[in-house]
Image 1 (cartoon, rainbow, N blue to C red):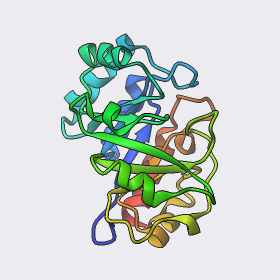
Image 2: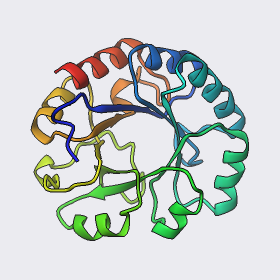
Image 3: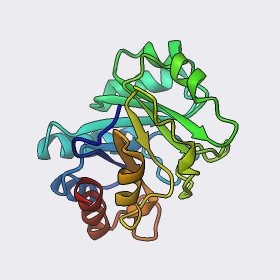
Image 4: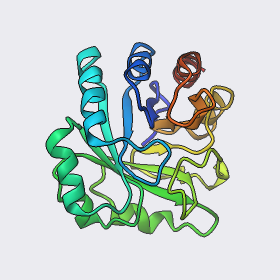
Length: 214
């Protein structure tokens, strides 16, 4: 599914404080990502995420509040869902379709892309996903690499909602949208101040402006 005829969906991932949430919403973000992967530098405890989701929903209830997990147990996910007002889930690990669909929330499934990637098989497996997010392949980091993959590998004939991630920033996102025409774009490090999890508000504004208006 292409976003060529309309503005791309924009997600700011790895937000960790209320000021960044408010800045992203004010800039016109479509979704915020809250990271519940304990090995990540952008990890959030459920208690902190509860407050951030409250800030986001008060500022603009239409902004998606997405919980990011990597090979978490079912109980871990459900425990977060009990306390954090999420509208969507994102799975960055080796989760199966049955696993992803059991939580009865829309979900995004992440695929690490390299030259050996079999996108067709992945898309067929996760036909129930709300969207598929294509990021740079890294089995250790599971996203958040800050590196872009070869955009020539983009599956341009796909009919799914496809979200581009990996090494995006305000300097290259307009090029990416023009070249690839993804449904959406996702950024974490490309709008940070230099400290992981702390966003630069001017970078947020320029990223979303570049993504949506070129």
